[in-house]
Length: 82
Image 1 (cartoon, rainbow, N blue to C red):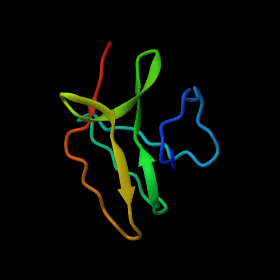
Image 2: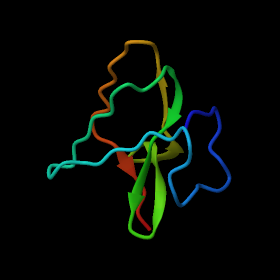
Image 3: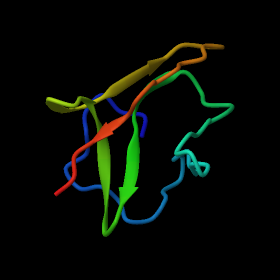
Image 4: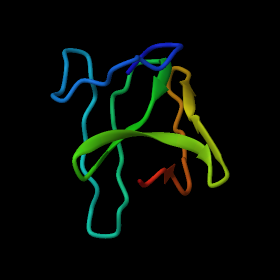
């Protein structure tokens, strides 16, 4: 998602402009050719999409600010679990 604010309702299916990917067996992933902009990383957890959060103890959605030609290593990505 390329927005400054999280949407109130997250779409179930991929929407035009969304950038999708899958993890490997180790849970790692890479996305290529992502246009510069602000993004929220959404992860599929059983039954629903969950936003990546700032940290283990900070549930705010993690905003990714991507500049042109930038590689952004995310490290550990935290997501809340019901």
